Length: 150
Ligand code: ADP
Ligand code: MG
Image 1 (cartoon, rainbow, N blue to C red):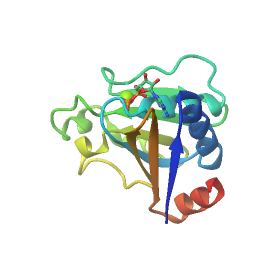
Image 2 (spheres, helix red, strand yellow; image 1 turned 60 degrees about the horizontal axis):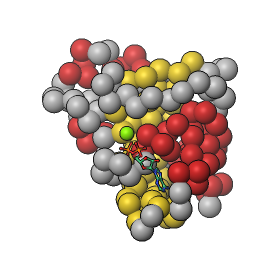
Image 3 (cartoon, helix red, strand yellow; image 1 turned 90 degrees about the vertical axis):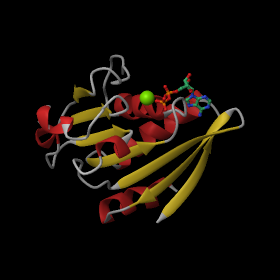
Image 4 (tube, helix red, strand yellow; image 1 turned 135 degrees about the horizontal axis):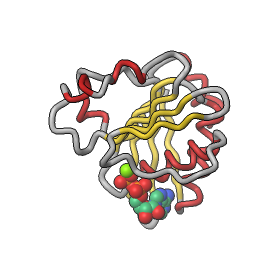
């Protein structure tokens, strides 16, 4: 199942993130698209929508930022600077992918072969002054969430 959305401004971007987070609080989400297309902005809306009160920084330099929410963890990855997917073994990547966590992964193609499969694949693109967002559901859980989002 696929769906497409147009997000006219930054507020629409964070709002859509918050909506998706409430429908899909656990599992694996890949966020793809060029630099500046709003992946981190969307993630910020999602994480804050799940109750995180502080800032959401881009994990470009840290590779991953953990957020301990009320009843589960969100791990926000940005693999842009990863030179070799094997480096993920050294940071103990497997420990992040437990059944209760939500993993948001920017630049998943840089970690190919070392990441779990996505439930939802998000593809962002600059369009006019806003962003287009294509969502593909790749698992039953992802499908259920996407159905409610549309
Ligand atoms: P990425 O993580 O994909 O590199 P960012 O989330 O850092 O992108 O966003 C880059 C810029 O795009 C930010 O200045 C942000 O405010 C802006 N932006 C995000 N979403 C939208 C949108 N829907 N419309 C217009 N600008 C947006
Ligand atoms: Mg980013």
